[in-house]
Length: 367
Image (cartoon, rainbow, N blue to C red):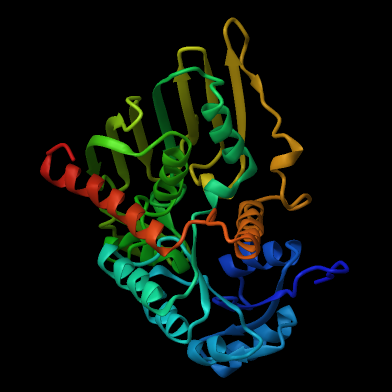
């Protein structure tokens, strides 16, 4: 990474989950780190010496390990990024925290709230800075949306309606994603697309004062794309939440597995003075591929271009863009002592919100 004269020393990054065979580490974190000044990719870990060697050669990474503790303890590593499947988060995050090294973990932080709480508490005891990859809130358009609401663009918010499709959790699953069909693995429609988007919604509006919910698994079996094998699915593929936000606004949310021929993302915010509308082809708001429109008074809905001031990392497109913006915010947090990027404690609170939804669905009692 090229540093301008007088720039702070780049932070050395080690990625857990940067595979030569692709995956989110390569698709999201690699281009994001390359675009953000202040970080330098220096290390990685893999499950075997051969896999580590292949990945290091492919991506030009100087340090390769099979042990996260060794990576985290190396003098050239300031930040460990954990970008692997959720069931392995706890075992891989814990050694980095114990080494006293800053950690950025993908969301969900853990398989469940209890694991997330243990990780957050360990980080606090060790005095380690943490960050969690809820990058929807870092996307320029989401930050602009938040400010429009705060500045009164729609007047008083009366209600919000959200409909989204998960893409996954439909009739077919790729073999590398087969683990997402099992609710016990923690990587579900509830935690991933719904969880990411819900975090953005609560950031832009407010948390829930009370809610009711219905969830269902309508497809009890799914087909593995590569083999045709039938696989049981226990993860919910339908999530419906209704409630009142702390602001008093009424909220209605429905996420469904698979994709729709019509609407895969529609988020409306309706107020006394106007409306804001987010639309896109995927319910994964964290990918940043959506359009923001608005109107006030007698105006017709029109696209609201995001002001340049919100573009912290120009030139990065696709799903890596919100990740790059999260890295840019994290670097600013470190330099300025701010706390813009959500940490493990925020992740625990978000896990708890999802637990409230699950309890409401399981008991039929308002939470």
